[in-house]
Amino acid sequence: MSISNPRQTFLNPTIPFAGTILGGLLPGEMVLVQGSVPSKADRFQIDFTCGSSVKPRADVAFHFNPRFKRSPCIVCNTLQKERWGREEILYQMPFAPGATFEIIFLVLRDKFKVAVNGGHVLEYQHRLELERVDTLCISGQVKVQAVGVLPSASSVSPEASLSSQDSHTNPISSSSGDLSVPFTGELVKGLSVGRSIAIKGEISQSAHSFSVNL
Image (cartoon, rainbow, N blue to C red; front, side):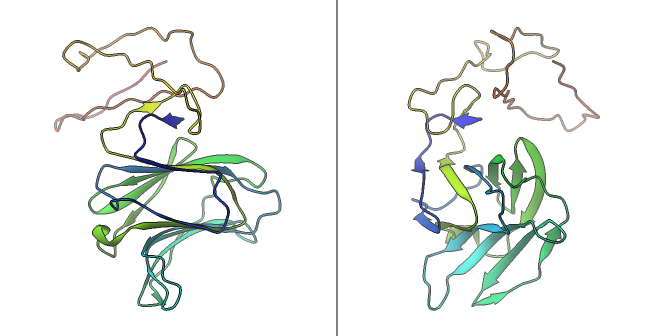
């Protein structure tokens, strides 16, 4: 999956990495991280921090820490005034040593939602004010190809990689901007390995279920 019109990108950053998120983060925005896990990796972490101070250490609003040894898990936490809070541990590992990955951090008013390789993984409630977050830090045993910050109005392109300079989308739309349901449409060129489909919509308050069939 890739992005069109990101408001900020970091390509092939050196790890450890610390980059300022221009303008901070707003609800509805997404942060995408594409990379790979070395075959002998022990752990890596992605931190959304409040500044980049080392001494005293900057507060960490969201610490996302996959660990591969012993019982593989993802540890999430918050650091405030140089003290860690209560760990939230997920004993589910969507990452594999030696494999590539794509992480999507969706920023909401009350929490982060995290998806890995297209699948929802976890949610993390904000413990610090979102307005304070202005830095993204990545460290540990990981290789990162690209990081992108998407404004809430951005579209997601299934055609090219994040680092591509000629990415484009093939949207299916109507003159009004909405598609009537039930809907049937043709996938031009079909599907192939590496392509993905993004669907944006709203769920009716009275809805019991809905389905998407390919």
